[in-house]
Length: 210
Image (cartoon, rainbow, N blue to C red; front, top):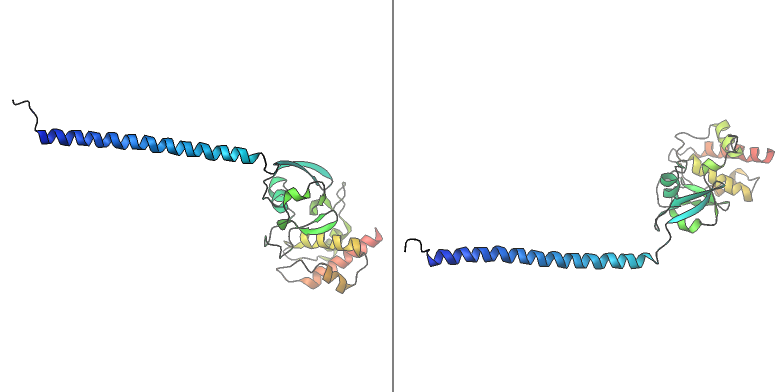
C-alpha cells in the first residue's frame, strides 16, 4: 500500500491541473472574442471607407498639376510643406492669426493652415515659389522687398508678400494707409512694420512699371 497517494494530495494535484486548464480555456475564449470583435471593427471600417473622401487628388499648384495623397483632415499648408516640398509657405501659429502661411487661391489671399486641401480641387493655388517667372526673375513685389531689405528674420515675409500681391490685384496704386490695411492680417514677430510697408510699396511701384 506504499504506492497509494494521500487522497488530499491527489485532490490538490487535480485541482491545480483543473485550474490551469480552466485558465487556458478562458484565455482561448477571450482571444476568440477579441478576434471576433476586431474582425467586426475592421469590417465596419472597410464598409465606411466606401463613403470616405478620396485620398489621391490632383491639385493645380503654381500652374502645375500635382497628384498627391491627402488625408481628409489635412490642411493645405501641411500638403504644400510636407507632401509637395514647398517650404516657402511657413507655419507660424497654425490657427489663422499670423498670416505666415498665406497663399493665393484663385488670386485671393487665404491662410493655408485653415483651408482643407480637398477644398481647393479645381482651383488655382499659388505659393511664394510660384511668383517668380520660369527664368528665375523675381516677382515685382519680391524684388521690392529685396531692394528695400524689408525684413529681419524674414520668417513672416512670404506671407506678407502673398497678401500684398493679392491686395495689389484689386488696388494696384494704394496709399501707405491702404496697403497697411490690406496686409493687416499678417503679423511680424520682429515688429518692423514700417520697413515692411516701405518694401511692399516699392513692390507696388515695380508692378506698375512692369
